[in-house]
Length: 576
Image 1 (tube, one colour):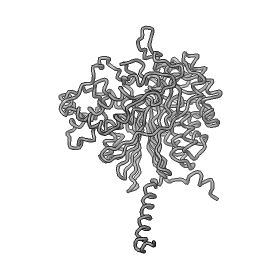
Image 2 (cartoon, rainbow, N blue to C red):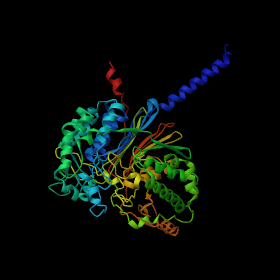
Image 3 (cartoon, rainbow, N blue to C red):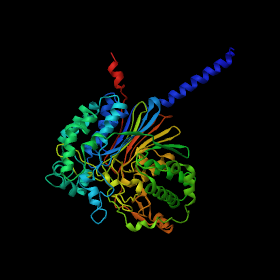
Image 4 (spheres, rainbow, N blue to C red):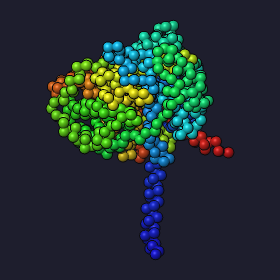
């Protein structure tokens, strides 16, 4: 039966409006924005965008450049999580490039003859190193998401490594902090120290062996790192210095694509890292607890009290339940359920802090330096986006470099629960879910995150060890209250992680009256010796078109907007 003309016209109008709305929603900002922890990495990302690459090509270039200019934070000897959004098919995925325990690893690997945990063995030297995942992740990103050849995206990093660059105050600080570990490795001493001492700012760091390793990766892809001459040098160097790597460890490494953790907080959509990162679970659990209270109506001290109690409970569940999803069963459905958040909310006393369990008698370490690990945020002209947090764990990782590779090896084995009740380098206490096992991935706190509230979008993350999740939590709450990128990265910070039972805060976070009120509520409050974190954020308003990027004023990073979008490489290649 023929429809009456008015009804036909109305249906066509609805169809046109629907298609227009879909196209408008899928459209990108028209140019790119990048925020990274180092100007050279930001420049590397923009360079490949100018060659027609997309956000994923930029992510490869930035990750590799950071491996060169921030060898204390990330690198080919480490791993990370790359949270991706592909605009063409509205797909969000997390690329898990987390390190894996060697196949010879055992639960007692870091216990001495008396069964006591030896922290130095899990933090210094090649025995502390898990099998790296970053090289495999870069190949995966280029092959499955990028437009440019891997070799093109790695060129800026290769150039930086071969030609060198002047180090800044942060490098000098980190080299001094990890001086004993670097001194113990002949290759690390040769490359990263100046005549055997920690260098001063403006010293030129050249890494020719690393340039060669990057070039081999560019030429041969996955096999260029995990097989052949590079793999042989890595295994031989590790084993000669007391490590347990084998060729099979490297040959069997693969990245894994995982479904991110998604949730909502008062209408704001949150997409974050999934296990083996604890970031998305702990972030979601804390936000679910806070969703049932009106933080905006509270006094500053009361608001901090509620947020702290949410942190305490979420971090407690991190210690109890979370680990490698391929190795342990976790009650994620329950932990992520808003009803469970409401149940935990009911356990909070508005007038009194809840003491953490007596395990605090272990007096976990309170690290003074939290600027290891790195993060970057990217969006391209089409709306593809990446939030990536990368790490080798503590500054300069294990401090060990295998001869002939230039690769600083991680000490991510310290992220396992090496012994029940024992704290790692970040003061985190874990349970059996995160115990050492062959081929297992250690639990992480890295929290690359996307936030979407109405027409507003944020891409963010930060380094900071166990404090990463609380930093992202505070920034997420600020974004929900309309904060822009600059406000999010500069926000004063405070942190509670269940154990130790201490509320840490930056100097600008609490005034004396707030400290007094929090103490009266029963909180043990302690000011940190220095500010922490190095957040990188990008925000975009789809309605107004406003695009912004910001680097944490605590760090040495740089945020830049692309002046003008370039055509994709595929289009440029086909142009007459």
